[in-house]
Image (cartoon, rainbow, N blue to C red; front, side, top):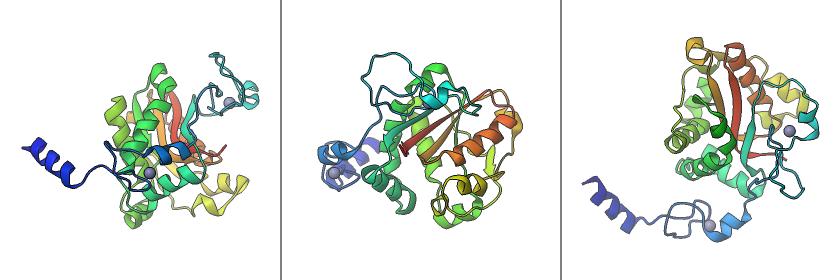
Length: 238
Ligand SMILES: [Zn+2]
Ligand SMILES: [Zn+2]
């Protein structure tokens, strides 16, 4: 019955490009919109995922910052796309315009971008939490939607409740550099430490800009005894 219903829906509501609305054979983007996107591909820094402009030799390489072995709470950082006009529109639509169906397509790309992380082994996905006042206003957490769809593909469970944002902050876009670090300082905490302790956690978010939000959240998770923290975002600012 469910399948018949699905078929009927498909006839009347064919899949459309999530960006321009063109009718497609399957969910996703039309060729034109797809070609506008800049996917991050090898070579990139094996640790922080920053793309290199060199030729891909297939070897694991580190960027200048990661070679210095500076202390970081992360194991790996990976993103599917460079943050630019094309990816920004897809993400903003998911975040603010109730285009929740975009999460399915974006999760497919997250799953591909996370291949090094899956290979290394993980236990749980944790979406970057929103403060409850923001959640009430926006009605959903875009990172939680991404984690939910990604979980269906990578078969890693999502923990929605152990990590919370206990303090409301102003949006990070209003700040730059050091102000961003200050704005999110100490705003995340772990509510159920037993569920985080000893776990290999993957933080899920839409965009990594300076990384200060992800870093602050990772520090709270590490302090709760997590074994490792990776980050997986749809896009990142290069
Ligand atoms: Zn399109
Ligand atoms: Zn690096």
